[in-house]
Image (cartoon, rainbow, N blue to C red; front, side, top):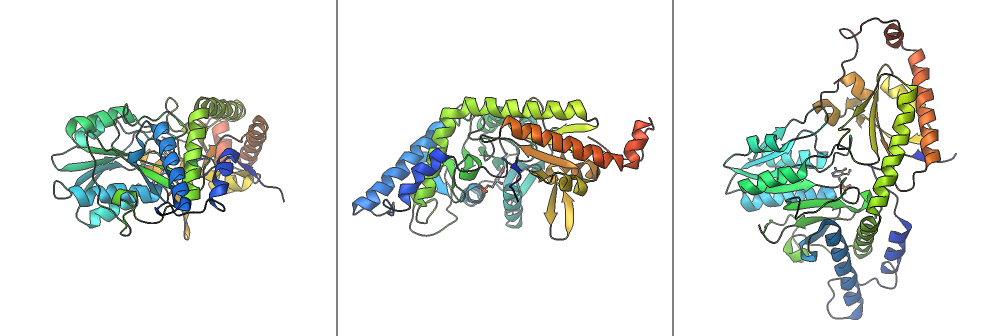
Length: 404
Ligand code: PLP
């Protein structure tokens, strides 16, 4: 059996060869503990960790001291939101986020609600976007944190982060952004974009899994957090635990490569998506793009195929590794909460697929994938009485699926 074609770059990315090469010595010869201050093994590990901090900081225009290593974005999100709640809870108990966030943010918000915080969940528009005006309206006297993602992992919509950051800065509210999908994919600048905290994750940027970091602003304003992990006081007391040196080296190298190749990567991913979508739209009708066509992550194409049965659709793409608009929860197939809050009907959400293109995707992959999609959708529609009725000009708007 050959592997399917990998079109799921928002789920994870392969480790870049340049990144792996940088990591390898730190598993074997240079295996020291970065906290060992008394010998060369420790110094070498610490030096490598320091370089990684510089590489990450350079990509997002931060300083090395503002980088706190974690096991990934989920942990960084927990540290940012709970850390702010614990530190500033006496000042106010209100936070703002959105319904389209990743579960790591939504579940952390739920946890904070149980601890007595009040959370406002902004509803995005039909493209998945939250505006600075919505944020301004939701900020109250007791608001201590705004937590909004930079780019959505399901539909790729890019929020107006700079404007949202400016509103937060003006109103004196801390701004945390989950930039897991944005860093390394689009330009990110914590100074120009008015960011106080930001998380990123190695495995989304051609680095290893299980490593990420939280950027924590040190000046104007200085952000203080209560640690969520007690121990040896690593990472300036914000995150205890022996550092994952090979992982951290990989994360730094991945950021350096991303900085160097950013324009090339963006052009490549955009060209592939353009090629893919133009083939699909030339051959199929009743296909909708989910997300903001004017502000979408390069390489992310979330499409809804009306008049096909969702589960059969994914089965039809047997040679493609893609992600569906339904999340498999124990027994039931739940439609994606992101598509739901954008107003996409359940039926259409079930027949939505996220295609993700990246560094290793080729034009041949795109052509193959587009052909398979077109063939599968056409075949399924042949079996669909609704599609037949639409073809005959019957208005289904009152009896069939509801779109946006
Ligand atoms: N936030 C977003 C937007 C994501 O896409 C992901 C990855 O699935 C996460 C957070 C969690 O990241 P990690 O896998 O590093 O915990």
